[in-house]
Length: 316
Ligand SMILES: [Zn+2]
Image (cartoon, rainbow, N blue to C red; front, side, top):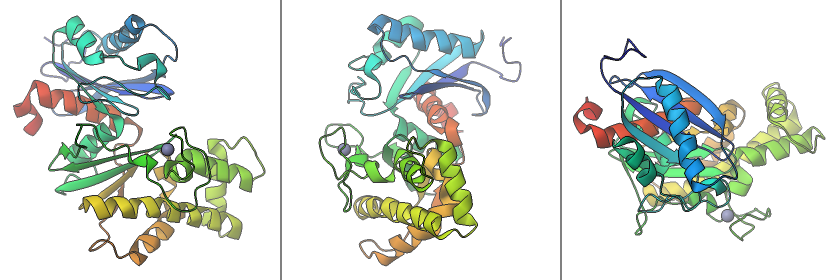
């Protein structure tokens, strides 16, 4: 009997979106409805044992006594083919950690892990904006740029089994040093962070907070020319990397996620016009904004775990 969530007929699936700043935990029922969710700060420095305990504590808290049938994790940055997190830059407390082994030992249930752009794409392909399309290219515009491609629901991977870290595509016009060692990376000009910095410069606010993007966006929509050009340039920068990815993957649909996607109204026309000028692929596929929003990575992680725990329930 599930006393914690009376609406859930049986055990629940928990999804975790492990981000550089905050981590989201969601609980899904058998119908893939979100029963509960919570967002907490991600620990920066802690021991491996405490990093596993951090996940356990919040899984237990959000499940609130319900029986957990599976746990799925979407982690920021690279996750190797054995499920070990390889992200020193944004997840230092989890670097080199085999969370799957630690959580499987603690719970004796199926535990899965993948990159957070992959889990966000799984959400959009399963229950979100791209559910009617056979393939999908997911771009998350956040602190960096996350990329994943799915074909019939399965992630496209490199030869070593890892998803493509395509935020580090080299694009023309970049001059901001990236932690990877180059100064031409797509994510340095197309991330929400880059938009934030540009909006800060426009408003003479060197710190460039999220509020600056909203003010600049409002000005752009109202017709202010410098603000319009800022967003037009941002749209073209997204298009430059997106065109490369469409050339490689030839996806049937594109979904933009992350907080940068919420300003699409201000730059979408520029992005689509730029894509339309380029002739490296047959046609521009439909571009959608994430339907799941901030919870997409965690919901997709729960679906990833559920798929492993109960393929039949996942298919229904
Ligand atoms: Zn880079």
